[in-house]
Image 1 (spheres, helix red, strand yellow):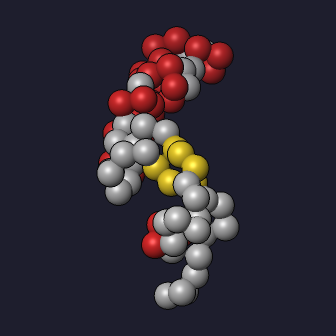
Image 2 (cartoon, rainbow, N blue to C red):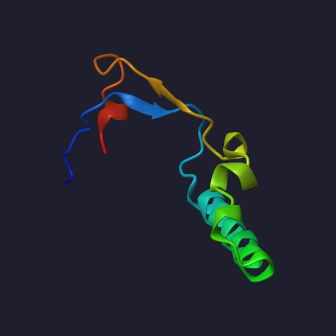
Length: 78
């Protein structure tokens, strides 16, 4: 896979390499809140989604953008 290329010319907007830690924190807080709601209310309809709990726009990468693959061939490498 040393010479594999991306199929779609889409990259993240900022220079952050990953959102892994942001996703871990968001998932951890989602689980804590939902577990507390289950114990307190004992009702599964009151569960909250990840988007209701955390702000996904505050993550490291703020969206994606299209690039020209001919102009930026290095960005098309995996």
